[in-house]
Length: 263
Image (cartoon, rainbow, N blue to C red; front, side, top):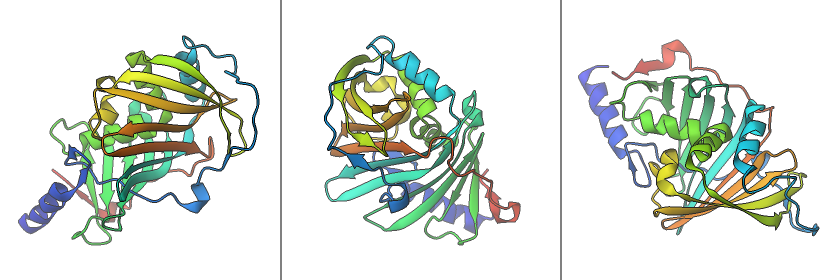
């Protein structure tokens, strides 16, 4: 891009922040009705762990997610009087470079919407204030100096349940069964508490203000697929949900003529 375009892009990138994560895109989006998670608290039954133990929880749940290939993910951080969130379809394979995602984010403070697309090592950003409506900025996630590299890793590892459980497998959290949960989207769930050093989850730690330790509450389906996650973060609460297993919409790159490479 020319000097003027570079100056506009630089100003935009400086303005984009996700909580304490400088140079990341501000995340926030109210959950759309068509992808809201239906929770039924009316059923009360004896506690069940679906055959899982504290020791087998992470490896068995990780294996269950490895057999899947796509999901619709919603992550929202409620912080005092504002909501920061992301939502969209995620597809994955055997490695992080197989991830395909199309995420919309906005901030209830600004009511703006930003679209991010990850296709392997390519990261596209669209909808930033001051940019033409048909322009997609393209970043290379293999560039260690790229301001978007950590943002891409957040999408790959936190929004993707496969990426999340890969990190948990390395983190070796303390795991406690917490009884039967409600039905979510018609699926019976069981509740689990995971306690972990926040530094062991770098994709989340780099994006959100939090203390040294995390207590994650997870709702797991009978199929051993995670349906919901909740945890306290600095100044608020993070809630993440997953739905449309195996049927999330596919992801495509923007048209070549609508892309401007950032270099």
